[in-house]
Length: 97
Image (cartoon, rainbow, N blue to C red; front, side, top):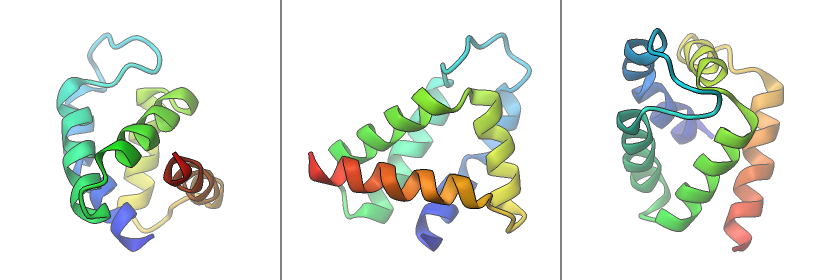
């Protein structure tokens, strides 16, 4: 879980850059997607399919703005328990594929 928090934290700065852009609900900037995928693959041993699935689940459940707020909380060491639960379930579902 610590690796997950770390790789999501990496994109915090990038996320802030794009929060003021007119991004439609649940659409994330390409740079954020690429950073997420790179970090996820690094922390998961290169499991690109699992990372794509995880990103898809995050995008289905969180707008970019909501995700950006979560990133700030994670960076501050205040990851909401409901997000940790969501990520755990999503990872389990994605790993089965």
